[in-house]
Image (cartoon, rainbow, N blue to C red):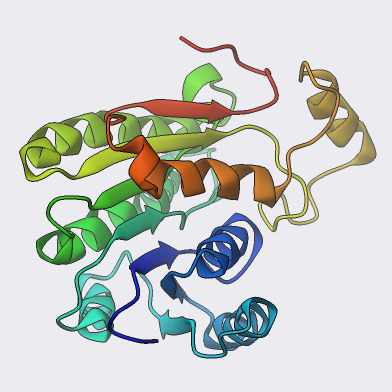
Length: 250
C-alpha cells in the first residue's frame, strides 16, 4: 500500500459482498484495508485481489472484532496518518438465539445490534478524524429486511443504521463528506444464509424480484463504487436499494 493512493477501509471484507467491494475499489486504484475477524480468510482474499488487479500490495488486512472498542483501535493504527477516502461498513449478519425466554430474547437483540450497528458506529467514529475533507465518503451496508421486515432483531438493527446515517450525514455535510446507505436485497454467493438456504427459499426470493434473478456481490460493489466516487458528491443521507425490485423505492 502506497501513501499516494486513495485509501478505502472495508469491514467484513474477507468474503462475499465485502470482498467484492474491496476487489472493485482496488481495481479502481484504491489502496484497500479489509477488516474482519478471521485473519487467514483476510490474508487469502488480499493476496487474490492483489494478484487480480496487478498490485500485490494493494490490499492490507486487520483482524479485529469491531464490536470491541479496543480492537477497533487496531484499524486506526493501521491507517496511521493517511487520509481515508472511504469507509465502507459492510460487517454484520444475522445472529440467532433462544427466543423462548425474555433473557434469551435480550441476548439475541444485543447480539444483532452489536454485529450490525455497534460495529459500524465504532469503526466510523474511530476513522472520522482521518476522513478526507472535503471528499470523504461513508457507506453503510443495510438490508432489504430493514425496509420490509421479516428478520426480527436483524431487521431492527439494520433499520437503526438508517437513522444513524441520516444523523451522521448532517454532522459531516459541512466538511464535504457524504454518508449513504446501500440496502441489498437477496444476494446469492455469500455466507449470510449458511446452510439455512433451501432451493425453495432461493426460488421464492428470485420470484420476488422484478428482474427474475438473484443479486450478486458485484451488484452491491458497483453501487458502492458509485457512492464513493466524485460523481456522487451531491448524494448524501440516502438509502439506495439494490434489490431487483423486490421493494420499490420510497
